[in-house]
Length: 148
Image (cartoon, rainbow, N blue to C red; front, side, top):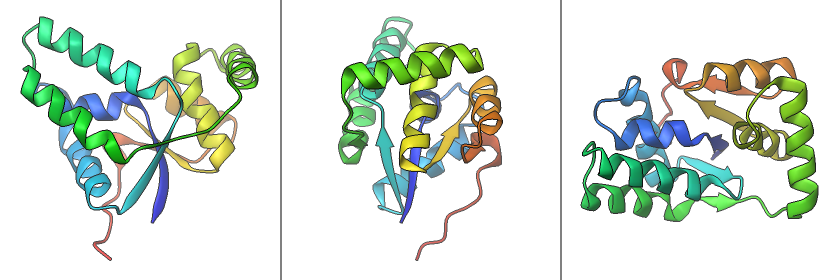
């Protein structure tokens, strides 16, 4: 099983039907459901997804049932157990070095801690991960996973 860190942008691509790179995101969702990948996330992950889903409901891009299904699909996600103060400090430092927003840097930080592959639709996040030697795959370049 491949260990990955999914940026919230990936989940939102499968949640919202009007998003670019949706096909790749749906493949990620399927791989997660079929346990072909194991997602390890920073503590803020579910809150970022929930906030975007709430905004999507208000903008009529998604309904409550669909939002609940997206959140349900994330039941299998594991969260990196970190000391909140040390993690915040490390993420802040990473953000200052890379120019990322702190929430975006958190995904890169977890990928570094876990030596996992970051999957993202965010170009700046991908470039920052590459800059510091973190394995990263752009959602648009996602290779197919085998069924085995």
